[in-house]
Image: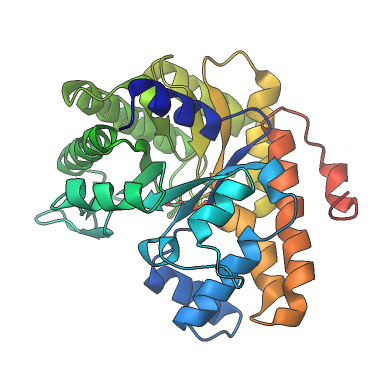
Length: 343
Ligand code: 13P
C-alpha cells in the first residue's frame, strides 16, 4: 500500500538536484517515425533493442532520475533477461509509464486535440503498479493557430489532466501533468506566453477541484518560446525570463518540481534554456528536464539499428544526460559540448 509519504518522496526523487527524466515512452506509431528517419524497421525486437541500448548506458543513472516507458516497454526485458523496470531500479532510475491513449481530434473544435484514456484508467494503474511503475505521464496538446486554442479545448484538457492525476494518486502513482503548448506555427513569443498562462491557470484550477495533492505531482510544461516559423526568434535569456515569469504567476509553490519537455527544440538549445532558468535561480520549485527528442536524438542517429554502434550511441546519450544534469544546477557551458563524451 502506497502512503502519502511514498508519493511525496517519489515526486522529490524525480526532480532531485543534478537529475532529470528521460522520456522514452514513444507510442509504436511515434517510434516508427523516429526509426524511419534512421532507416530501421519498426519491429518489436528493434524497439526492445533500442530501449535496451538506452537503459544499459553506463553511468546514465547519475543524471536520470526516472524513465517514462510505454506499455509495451514496461513488459519487455533487457538482453540478459532482466525486466526493464528492474534494470532501471538497479541503476537508480524510477520506472514510469505513459497512461494516456493519445491526443485525438476534438469534436466541434477543428484543428484541436483532446487526450483520451480515462476509461478503465484506475484498473490499468493498478496493473502498472504491480509491474513496478512509480509514476505516470499524461500529455495534453494545445495548438496555437488562427482562432485557437479555444476555451473548450483548454478546459476539457485541463479537466482530463486533473481526473488522470487524481486517479494516479489514488492508485499510488505520482502523476506527471503535461499540458504542452505546441511550438508549431508562426506565432510570436507574446502569444505563446498568453496561451501558456491561460492553460496553466486552468490546469491548476482543475487540479484543485479534483483534490489532487500538489506535493505529489510533477508539472511537465512547454517553455515560453517563439513559434517554430516565427520570423523573430526570442533569445535564450528572453525564453528563460518569460518562462519563469509565467510559471511564477500560475504554479503553486507546493509543487515540488517542474520538468520541461523539449517539444522540438534542438538538443543544445533545450539544455541552454533550462540552464539559463537555473542560473537566474530563486524559483520555489526544482527546474529540470523530461526530454524525449532532445535527450535521444544524437543517440538514435548514431545507433542506426546496429549492435556495432551501441557504444557510440550510449556515449551520445550519456553526454546529453550529463549536459542536462549540469543545466539543472545552472552549471552548463556551451564549451562543455566539445569535451569527450563520458568525461
Ligand atoms: P519531447 O521532449 O521530445 O517533447 O518529448 C517529451 C514528452 O514526453 C512528450 O510527451
